[in-house]
Image 1 (cartoon, rainbow, N blue to C red):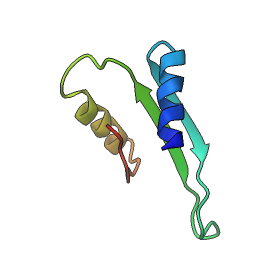
Image 2: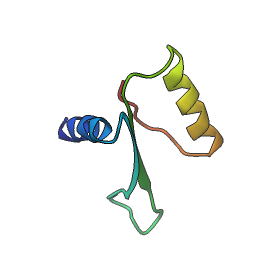
Image 3: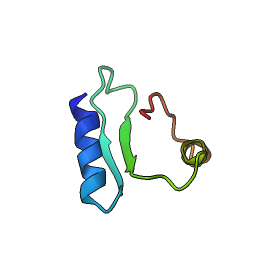
Amino acid sequence: MARVLWLFHQGERHAGIFLDMEKAEIENAAEREESRVLFAVANPPQGNFLPQIMEVFNRLDLGVRRAYT
């Protein structure tokens, strides 16, 4: 919950849009390396904005495991 609140505040502080990437801490780090993409937007322009963003992430071959709306 703290990360979601932090992400919300970052979006507010950066004119309504925030994008960041950080290295993810995982148990089997020797097997693969993962990164976490953090994305926040305030007042999306239209109702289907989130599905459009998810489509961009899918086309970039970024696996999405969780999304907060």
